[in-house]
Structure formats: C-alpha cells, structure tokens
Amino acid sequence: MTSRAGEFDLIARYFAPLAGDGRVRALGLADDAALLVPRAGSELVLTADALVAGVHFLPDDPPAQVARKALRVNLSDLAAKGAAPLAYLLCLSLPSQTGETWIAGFAEGLAADQRRFRIALAGGDTTSTPGPVTIAITAIGEVASGAMLRRSGAKPGDEIWVSGTIGDAALGLRVLRDGAGAELPAALRDDLVSRYRLPQPRLTLGMALAGSGVVAMDVSDGLVQDLGHIARLAGCGAVVDEAAVPLSTGAAALLAADPALRDVALGGGDDYELLVAAPPALGPLLAAASQGAGTALHRIGRLVGGRAGVILRDRDGGERRLARGGWTHF
Image (cartoon, rainbow, N blue to C red):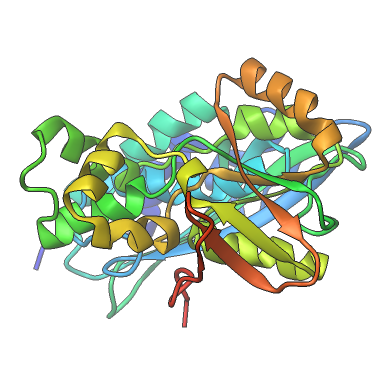
C-alpha cells in the first residue's frame, strides 16, 4: 500500500494553490463554501460530469491528462451554452493505494488547464473509496442574461452543423484498447489517442454563438445519439450526409483500413465538438463565428419533418440507421 498524507495536508499541498481569489473567492479552501460574484447583467450556468476509472478513462492514463479531461468535458458543456468559464467544484474519490505521485500529477494537470481556460477552483471534497478513482466536477460559467444557448427550439428545415472532426476519440480508444490501426504511422495513431485523452472544448466558438438563437449541444455520447436529442425535442427527424461528416487525417486513414469501424466513429462518443441546428438564413452568422473562433464548422445534414430518429444517407441516396446510436450511461 502506498502511503500518503491526510486529507487536509493534501488539500493544503495540492489544491489550495489552485483556489480562486478574484470574483471567485475560494477563501483558500479553508472554509466549507466559496463566494462567487457574477457580473451585472449576466447569468450563471452550472453543469456537472463525473468520470470513473475504467469507464471514462483507462486506469493507467497519466494523472495530469485524467485531470485535464475531467475539467474539459465540463468546459465543453459550458461551450455548448455559450458561457465563459468562471469556477469549478471538485469532488475526488481515491482508493487507498493511490499515492501522492498520482495526486501531484493530477493537480499539475488542473493547474495547466486553469491557466489555459481562465477558470479557478472554488472548493469541493476529497474522500476515500473502495472502488475506482472517481472524479466529479461541477463547472460554473457566465453568460449575458438571456443569451444562453439551448438544445431545444430547432425546427424542420434547420441545417445541422458540427465543429472540428468526428470519431477521433472513439477510434483513439480502439487504438489504445484493441491495437486498432497498427498498420498506420505512429503519428496518426498518437493523434487519435490524444483526442480520446484530451478533448478540445470549443469555448471560443460557443461564446461567439451566444445570443444568436441557434440550437446547440456538445457531442459527448456520439454524433448520432446527440443529434437524436435535438431532433426529438424538435418533434422531427434528421438526415445526415455521411460523406459530409468531417474526419481527421488519422480517422480517415483508419476507416480506409478498416471500414467496419465507421459506425464506431459516428456513434462512439467523446468527441466534445459542438453540434448546431440553425435556419439556412443563419449560415453567414455561423461562418463568421467559425472564422472568428478559428474552429471549422461543417454542414452535415438537415432536420426533416414526418420522420423520426437519425438517418444516415450515402452518396448514392441509400439510407440506414445505426444499430447502436451512441454511448449509454446505464
């Protein structure tokens, strides 16, 4: 068994240095609560996600990358709401054999992304568990009053857009877990693995879309499944042109080598890209937001009345549905 300091020593050593002291007043993590001071004319956006070793990350993933992934999946939710990051709460449950080397690496990962995304730790809890490492983060963002993006409100005829590329994370997990893509250059495999371990929350793009009236959510459980949520709330279906779904160089190479993995890319989850539905008239607004954020947006389909669910259409007009649309939590 690896020894480690007690709870309060760990907090003082590794987490108190991460505490906010501006508009986020964490009081040095010495109290049972923190103070948050929102700007006038703004609203607070709250979101929470939990990550469990062996479910959401591999037990031997580097602790700094685990920390950054745990924070970034929450930041992706803020991005989908058009919110700017402000603060987060961290609940960390650790098995007794988790040593301080792991905890120190975890704290270093948080510190790196706090600087990058301008967010501060406001408090939380640490506890021991007989189960796997479990990380629960509640992120708090800020958006102008009435400007928060929602996943409801789309209509038949709206165009469907997605940022970045799709499928990299799910394929990266296959590379790590199953050895997929052994015939590909190491650099391409590494790129896919990096997308699984280290999501890229589209905060700048989300904030550029705040108040625009578009419908948005992040792709966490798979493109097809998450698009199905938007379509269901709109009371309609969606048609996606498979050829229009953006793929990275690594994903395209892996799918060319093993076409059977295409459904993994479309339904595997962990992309953390932004999925947007908007009337065609808002196309120029989306193009301007994309250019300003430096993040590509790709039009991949349309919401359609008189149908339900998500239909995939190939270049010849053939249609199909995924047998399994995406990740399910239970």
